[in-house]
Image 1 (cartoon, one colour):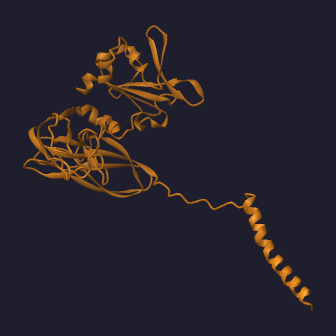
Image 2 (spheres, rainbow, N blue to C red):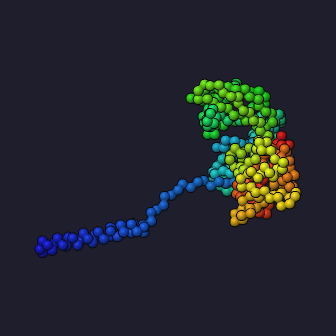
Image 3 (tube, rainbow, N blue to C red):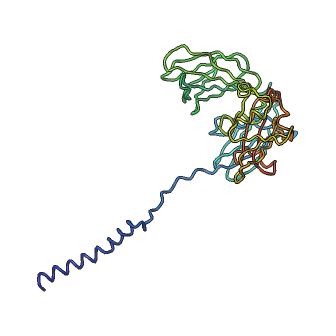
Length: 349
């Protein structure tokens, strides 16, 4: 074999070896190669749990029982029917239930699918005076309003607790005058007096300065027990409320008819079909005219005209539509559109 022939043979072998490689390159450049998609971490599925609290002796429903769930910053509170519903990721939880005049109960929940759990509390022989007043302290940075996590907040002469990610900490204490102290590295210590309301939750906004400067007085808000039991504050604090009309809004822009206040709420349409027949409409998928929102007053459905209620009567209003509507208010109207929850000043007083 000549030198030329041997060299040509080696060239043919190399050419045959390159064909599959070049073919792969051609497929990739032509977009024929589909990469394996990256796996995304699946969010844990939320499971609806309904807890029914009853008196162990009389089987009567217990309103105002505090249900604490590990990992939840605030307790859930049973309604007038003794029920409370909440969603949790699947897993096992040991919940604690407390109510004035009853012994404390602990119960293990194995959360895997939606379920209803009935628990019974035994009345104490020596009945307590009632639930202690609740003090909620919200610690913020002065000037920016940023939540301060990890601040040590204490009742002078009492216990000390650490603020959570939202800068909040809660105490169960006796009503009356008290003093709270807040400490955090990088901030000036602050001690302020506060008056704890005997009925409901007293909310204190406490501003801490990066440097030691004179601070304005703290703001104290007394929350209605009626609105607390009906879950209004829980929905507001968790960001569940879609639209909120407050007493301050009504006072800032006075109106003659209550429906006029809803005209300024984004997403809500006011329909005055005839005198005395004013209706509120929310967005509806596939219907440009929207669908009618069902009206509740202090938690009860009503067919009364919205303008039958004077603006001075209203403490606040929650507006929902679609799947954001709270589960206890769904399905009552044929369209399943949404609801307007009116809370009167009398009911919230």
